[in-house]
Image (cartoon, rainbow, N blue to C red; front, side, top):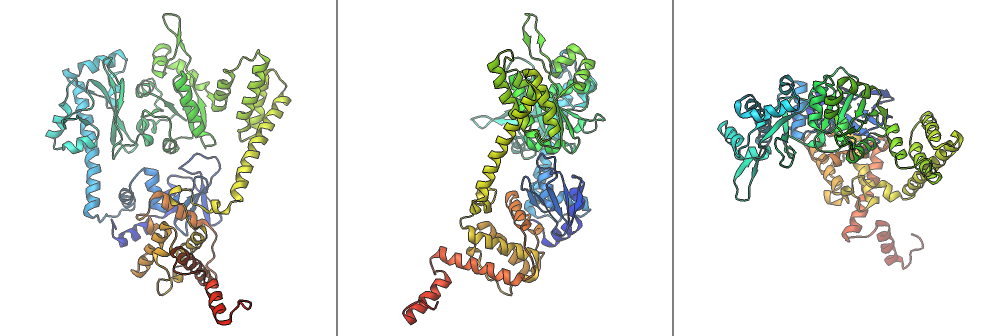
Amino acid sequence: MAFPQSFLDELFARSDIVDVVGSYVQLNRKGTNLFGLCPFHSEKTGSFSVAPDKQIYYCFGCKKGGSVVNFIMEEENLSFPDAVRFLAKRAGMEVPEEQGDREAGRRRARLLDLNRDAARFYYQLLQQPEGRAVQDYLERRRIRRATAVKFGMGASLDAWDILLNAMLKKGYTKSELLDAGLVVQNKNGGLYDKFRNRLMLPVIDTRGDVVAFGSRVLDKSEPKYMNSSETPVYSKRRVLYGLNLAKKSKRPNIILCEGNLDIVTLHQAGFDNAVASMGTALTVEQTRLLSRFTKELVLCYDNDNAGKAATERALQILNGSEFSVKVLQLPRRRAENGELVKQDADDFIKLQGAGAFERLLNGSETGVEFRMAQIEGKYNLANDEDRVAYCTEISVLLSTLPGAVEREVYSGRAAELARITPEAMKMEVQRAWKQRTARENRAALRRDLNPAAKSQPQERSLHYQNVRSAMAEEGVIRLLLLDGSLFPPEPPLEESDFSSPLLGKVFAFLWQAKCEGRDVSLASLAGELSGEEMSHLTAICQKPESAQNGGRALADYIRVIQTESRKRSGNGMDPLLAAAEKYKDKKGDTRNV
């Protein structure tokens, strides 16, 4: 155990799950539990439940669940030891750490210190004569000095090992520089700086730590843009460039763009609510991060095929979420040769000004309008055949809208474009809605008619080989967590009796905790199980179980497990069949059995 159990018991006692989760999620009481919008996936109707009596949370939508420490691990992207430290700091408790945990914490702290010192080194180079090339580049991009300082910009020189040597002199090791992704190892084992001859853009998370770097090359070499690789302190799926600044904005929404320099230009122009993903499309983890600071997003990706595809992917992720989503489409500009070419936010503001961008922002369309426009662009609505095809495709889109009023409004617009009556379009949307609903109902019916499949864990790696035994195993775990007084004087089962390795491990842990006089609760398992295992165990605890007649129910569950265990081992047969065979040997028949 990484931490003394007595310390963890006290920490969990001081970290009430309602208080902790309530600082991230708005909770409303419904009966004995509290509900809110899940912070781990997009939804409009709250399916996220917190049980104060059990000190657990569970989402009936995405099926994630666990204890207070699991919530912090998931929400803050922390390991179990770091989540414990996070809660301990919140509770004002000193952490008694073992050598291994101290080493892990020290390693993380060292990497963050290294990133900070590297950022300062790059920043200082930018101020010196050696950084003249980057200074000139910033002037060409019309990025003011105050803006460069605000974002902590720096310069990497056209040299192989200047950062390497500087950081080694500061006492960092070659191994730490490799772990931080600041240097690269060649095939001969030599090290050299990863970032050379580039504008450096430190990536700062919402806690103020430098976790990574973005960069832009100064010449025509490739790659033009280069970001840090994944490290122990950086996951690009969980970070948004500029959010450390945008979270302080007074504007009512957050603008989501593609490029780091777009963000710099937008902030300089007064749009301090702009952020960018780090070389990846919008992720669920990033939407969870955004939900802490806003409920309104504006997608402002490049107006080319790649940008439109990124917009569509983002809309799919945000579909059905609590976010109000708009799309700002930047118009194409005419090049000197007369050709219409794409432009990003940086180009538009420099050519048209902040006022023009503000007008576009105020007139940005909803996500539905954007998707309707994309479908419209595929067809020639002067052609009857295309009009029919357009009506078929647009009706499928409109049938997915959750509200009847939304469907009616947008169906009217589509009907006007297709030059058909609103009634005809409404009927087409209803037909598409019925077809989709029928498909979903058939799929649900297939699941309901297959109890074995319905009983299986959501996570494939936890698949039950023996569903009958596993259902009884779940019952044993559920009853022991529900009422600790049900523990028999002696262990009635071995871990090997369980068909599910996970449930066997949980039973063994609970029994050991009981014997040692430790806390027997779901929270006590947080350090022993993975996130997926903890979610599954929480789901098990959501199933109905009564402590009344608990002793009899426990005995029944144990009997099923023992019977199935003997069948698997081949050391015996079903007890009823064994009794029948014994009676038959004595009497010569089984008529009285």
